[in-house]
Amino acid sequence: MKYKWSSTKNIEKLSKNTFGNKLSKKVAKKLRSILGQYDFFYSHKDYCGHGIWFNENSFELCIVSDGYPDKRIMKWDNENDFIMFLSKQSDYTCSGADINEKLFYTSAPWELNNQRLTEERLKDFVNEC
Image (cartoon, rainbow, N blue to C red; front, side, top):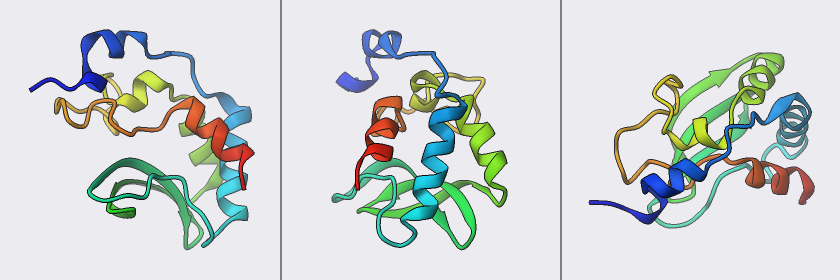
């Protein structure tokens, strides 16, 4: 079954420009500053895609279900390691389409590019609250 968000046409349009160090530092700072108040993931019923949050002095990338972290994908105890990782990502790698980015890659059409991290969402996140 094909989904609009995971169509070849939509995947080909995704930016391969990396998020960069400046934006990634702002994301880390924001996550630390809002500890327990707001996290970076969708919050609705059922599958909510990928999210990031700061929890117990570490940054976590997780699969989100019903508005809560459901399964941890990766954890960084060091803020600089998290920033370095995030700065090298792009809309394309985070979508799950890049076979070389093992943390995000998926062959499942439902998960591909479905509520994933994007530069636009990250920029909106650091500018709100």
